[in-house]
Length: 456
Ligand code: NAP
Ligand code: GDD
Image (cartoon, rainbow, N blue to C red; front, side):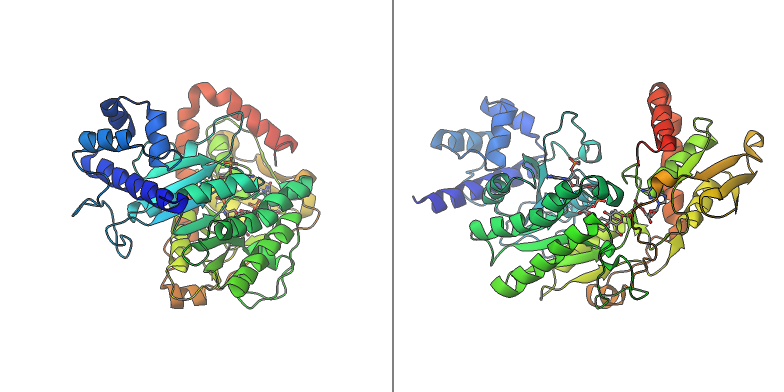
C-alpha cells in the first residue's frame, strides 16, 4: 500500500468508527474500556493521528459490532444533514479559532448539520476552553494542537484531518491590542492566512477543500462611503485591519491563481453572551450587571460616539457555512444594515439592568448619570470617559449593506434585533454576576482594572 492509500484507509476507518460511536451513543471513554486502551490512544485513532493496525481494526470491529473497514449502511446521522452526508460519509470541517466566540457557535452549527468537526487549539498556561467545554467528548468533535504562527503544525493538522471545508477564524482579533502587538497581529492575521492556503496546497487538497476566511468590516476603516458593500473601497485604519487586508487579498489571489474555492466573509461586528470581555459591548453588559448588583461603581469607556452595525454572532456563523455552499466562490458583506452608537448601546444595556441613564457633556467630560432606577444609584455618574480607551486611529462609522447576502445566500440579517441582542447579553450577565458569589473578589478586581485602563 502506498502512503497515500494508507492515509485514505485510516481516514475511512476513523470516520466509520465515529459514525458507529454516534449511532450507538457510545463515548470514546466507553470504547477505550471495551478495547482495553487508553482514551488518549482511542482519540489518536479517531483523529487520524495514529494509524490502525490489523489488531486494532479487529478489536474495534468486535467492540462496535461491525467490520469497521466497510461503510456502515443506514446509520442515523443526528441533526439536519441536508446536503451534508456524501456517499454515506460525513463532511469534514476544520475550524481554526475554535475556542473563540465564533468558533464555538460555528462548531455547534456544523455538528448539528452532521459534520465531523475538527478544531485547532493552541497551548497556553491556563486551559481556557470555556466556550467549547460542552462539546468536548462528542464523537464528531476533535481538537488538535497547532498555532497560526507555525506552518508545520498547520500542515500536519490539515494532512491528518483532510478537511472538505476549512473555516479560518483564528486571529488576534482585538483592534486596540493590535497597536500594542502589531508584529504578532501581522504574523497571525496576515501570514497565518497564507499558511493555511499553502498547507491546503501542500496536502494536494486545493481542488477539493473549500476555505472560508474571517474577513472584517475594519477593512473599510476610515470609511469612504456609507453604508458599505462589497464594492466600497478599503481604507484600513489599524495594524489589525492592515493585517486582515493582506488576508483578504491573498485569499482572492489564490482563488484566481490556483482556481481554489476560497472566499472572505466581510463580517461587521457581531456580539453575544460569549463575546470577549474587553470588546465594548460585553464590557458594557458586564458592567451594567455589576453596577446594578452593587459590585462596580462606574464604567469607563473611550469614544462613545463611535458607530457600529452590531449583529448576533449565532446568526452570523450560518453565513460562513452558506458562503461555502455556493456554486461559485465569492466574497460577501454580512451585516444587519442597522447602525447604533456606543452611547446608545450603553443606554439600552443599563435600561435592561433596570437603570435609566442620561448623557450630558462632551468628549472626555461626557457622563452617563442615573436618572431612574435603584434609589442608591439615582444621581450618580455610572458611565464616564477615559483617554485610556481612545485609539491612535479609530474607526467610527461602520454600517453594512447586506443586500448581496440577502439575495444570494437567502440570509435574514434581521433575525435578532439590536434590542434583542442587548437584552440577551444583559440577561446572561445579570445571571453570571449573581452566580459568581465566591469569585466576586476577582471580578471586582477586573472591574477596577477596567476602570484604571489596564485592561482594554
Ligand atoms: P475571538 O473570540 O477573539 O477568537 C479568536 C480565536 O483565534 C481564538 O480561538 C484564539 O485562540 C484563536 N487564536 C488567536 N491567535 C492564535 C494563534 N496564534 N494560533 C491559533 N489560534 C489563535 O474572535 P471572534 O470574535 O470569534 O472572531 C473570529 C474571527 O472573525 C477573527 O478572525 C476575527 O478577527 C474575525 N472577525 C470578528 C468579528 C466580530 O465582530 N466578532 C467581525 C469581523 C471579523 P485562544 O482562545 O487560544 O486565544
Ligand atoms: N474595546 C473598547 N473598549 N472599545 C471602546 C471602548 C472601550 O472601552 N470605548 C469606546 N469604544 C469604541 C472603540 O473605539 C470602537 O470604535 C468601538 O467602540 C468598538 O470597539 P470594539 O468592541 O473593541 O470592536 P471593534 O469594532 O474595534 O472590533 C471588533 O469588530 C471588528 C469588525 O468591525 C472586533 O471583533 C474585530 O475583530 C472585528 O474585525
